[in-house]
Amino acid sequence: IRLRLSALRDLPAVTLDGAHVRLGANIGLLSDIPHVREYGADHIGLYRTEFPFLLRKSFPTEEEQVELYTRMLQKAEGRTVTIRTFDVGGDKFLSYLDYPKEDNPFLGWRSIRISLELEEEFRKQIRAILRASAHGPVHLLFPMISGVEEIRKVTALVDAEKQALDEKGIEYDRQIATGIMIEVPGAAAILSRLLKYVDFVSIGTNDLIQYLLAVDRNNKKVGNLYNALHPSVIVTIAEIVNVCRQHQKPVSICGESASKQECLLLYVGMAADRISMTPSSIPAAKQFIRAIRYEDARYALDAVLEMEDVESINDFLSHFIQKRF
Ligand code: PEP
Ligand code: MG
Image (cartoon, rainbow, N blue to C red):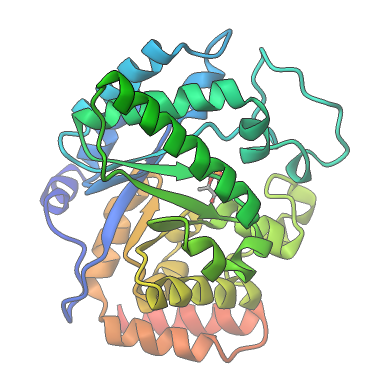
């Protein structure tokens, strides 16, 4: 396995007929960085900054954050790092934050809703990420956006913080790309409106599946209903990718579904610009991509988009994969 890993590490994820897929790693801590190298990710598709926040007893200061993100960029050795602002609530609770008692935390005070309410902390983080962007390639990502109002507020905060840095003569990447996670079905439905405000999109399949199918991503009782191969999930993701392409905005598919061969085949068929996953899933994904043809993936996607139910899709894809690879 070691030999195979090291042989694969520096090879590109390119299909037999020449389609390039950029494979990224989803990480949460500095200590994950060795895996990025070991498993051959060409970028960090998702840095979940809530992980360092969760390990502390209070919100990290601006200086602490600048140092943390800068170290992450240094250790990433020139790879682009997509830094997502802290995404708490749902099932991730900060010990130093008072949460309301909620019947449905995943539908409640979560993610960008918390950030926008804790405006000072949110601004502090935006400022820290901007400052770190002077030290390496950063994409700035906002989670769980559900409407234009939210992205307008976020954009206003980013602009205000950029201006404040300009006034103080503090360096940051003026071209820094900003993007949103599409993980709320309502946001997918109005994607073209949202795209006016951003440079890129990251599809968060973990949450998108849960919200599209109304199935709690952590509830084992209904775990059999949580399925990335549900036709509504595939149709929605394919449509998001299409709309991004029409608007010439890069799109990344981000979430654990990409580590399943059946899903990966479809995502390759959609020609997503980037696909990111847990680092340890990358070598197998790369090997798979290097063994398939984009034209076949496209054909499989078109066939699946006509199908009615999970079972037909599953059967078709597993036979398709078995037959060819
Ligand atoms: C997602 O929702 O797919 C995602 C990548 O983010 P998280 O798993 O952190 O919610
Ligand atoms: Mg999410």
